[in-house]
Image (tube, rainbow, N blue to C red; front, side, top):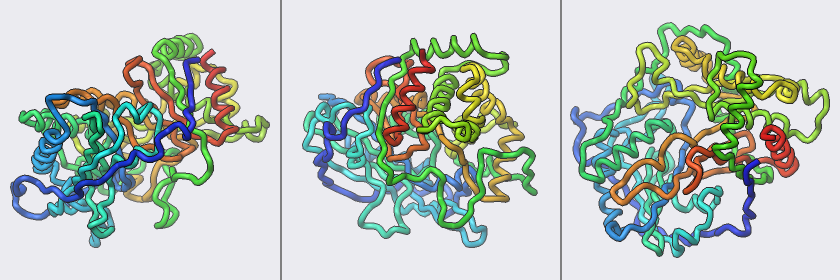
Length: 451
């Protein structure tokens, strides 16, 4: 297999020595067209994603764009961006008449934070490794504001001693999915270059409104009903000690997995893609990483989840520039025994069938299920892919990012896929967080499947 490594936390910078210089609010540069306060409807897909997503975008120094110039350009561009992305200056609220969350587009502002680190960008070390200290590069809560008046969007620029800097963005997940966030970044880059928006956004979330009356026409094994008001998500952070490990899967190994899948596949009904083979690899390794290989354990069912973009699957199709969450959770399930004994090609087929299942009617059924039952995705493991979202490809006036990554927290039931940095553009980094004994098993099965 390719190089796998786990960097000891003792070798990582525990404190990036970040000093906050300014923490304030910024506001849209002009009044909205209607000049009236309004609410933005949130779909049932948006409703269950009320949590912050934090990403960091690292940039090398550029003599033509010192941090102080970059800062002012970013401030002006974000102010302009909030005219068309007006919900970013709003606040999430519970609508008393409907009992649903919506966005009060009240122009209350977005967070804007200026900071500096005492380190150079190179001194941060390996940017791919999920250093918990990277959380210092992002602001999600403004101390000057009460808890019920926190912005949906907060931006932090942290400059390094070398002239490089990091853009830290915190967005409530109700605002964007990965694809629409990429479009937001591209639009921001256009505004920074004093150009028109590259892709004007579509903010109409009613395009994913439930049918009247709602009709659930499929069984939805990937969803679980909300049991009580205190439960927010199945995938909670754990206090259990977990080892982090990053497995680098090269483009050559991905090609070998594809060939292995084709050789051992029983049908041609599913595309053998890089994502499908890597996800099948993760599913097998995660399901078999339990410490005891007993018949009772092998009879237990394993369910893997992953996101599928539905913009092009609906009839009529959603606009590609739709800003909301237009992703649903695909699933595959099987007994662990099957994941041990079936051919790799069959496991890839099961993964691919999960995506193929999501048609227009299936997607509408999921949305209607949410209208009736109130719940969220549930499974043994979720594959969260940042592999091909394309954040590092966005061209800013000062160049493309050196690396982009989310802030990663301890979650043993989430496996993340990241692109490589300055290397194999078609390879992938697989980040797993597991208890030590399970991590050893995970790596053993990884090597077994890749052999």
